[in-house]
Length: 219
Length: 219
Image (cartoon, rainbow over all chains, first blue to last red; front, top):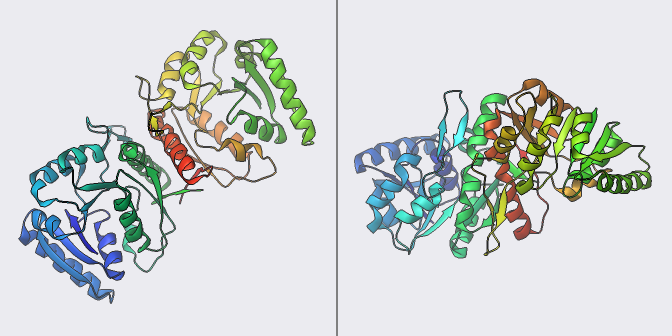
């Protein structure tokens, strides 16, 4: 499929680009400017070549990247995610849009806390910014970036997703299973997203305290 | 140790009573009236006998049960938990108090949602009801009742805990490890509790949709 990563760098973006390229998907890196997107794309191309993966990857400004893709991953920090989507709203028709965005902050005592926007979750805030035709799925909040980017390693994690469009969730399930051997667990409608997003700051606290890169499994 | 279960029936209480009895702990069942507590205690005694477990178990009114115990488990529905603790406040000195209480409700569309009280979590609401000397730990939110009560089966689950008293967390860790082979993961201070409590309604949604009794592991 044609998968755009808006934002395109940082956190889990690299792992997704590498693993989906390996699985034969076409990647579009979106960034604020086409130039920036090209720079990031060149870095990914180099990385893919060094791993012997033949990837199809191009760079575009966010608006063009979203327009060209079937699936759009919002790889943007929580404070800019909804406003970025709002600013390129016209690029969306019926794409599947995926939000892994987590609203959290670090307190002075170093505790990481879930701090949702007024909508109750980043997913609901982003949904309000998208046109109604776009099909939003909440997913990929709890993947450890380092392990995700190690493409030779299989990942025995659960990816909990939620959303209001069954076909969109089926597509996200398919492309997630292309990253072996992650299992998708559909929790239900998009309004469940705060409970999925809130696991991330908990994991970050556990990671700091126990010096791990935890993900989650439901057993 | 002397462990009281206030409320004493329902959900995870049975599994805790059986497993801690098996591990040699002394159980005190607390209920609104001593009479009710005795009835519940007799049922547990019968169950223990049928499983060939020699248990030390007595029934008392909640106030006496809390007073007599070293560790007090609040096995009370969220809407009554804080007010019950408030009503027997004088029974608490420096006991370790454990809250597995989760504030959730079921919407008309059958989705289970995390709906915390004004304090932000049941843990913080209960802390406000307790005297400052009591040492509250948040734990046991995400244990499946049925599996917990099957005492012959080892449980490969993670129990995420949080609290502000390190010694109290060490005691909870010890009595949790007496229920093989659960692992305790300390997340940090008590204020992290909303993120632990919110996993439960997510799991309930997953259970309904996937016909499972999920617990959680961090891997």
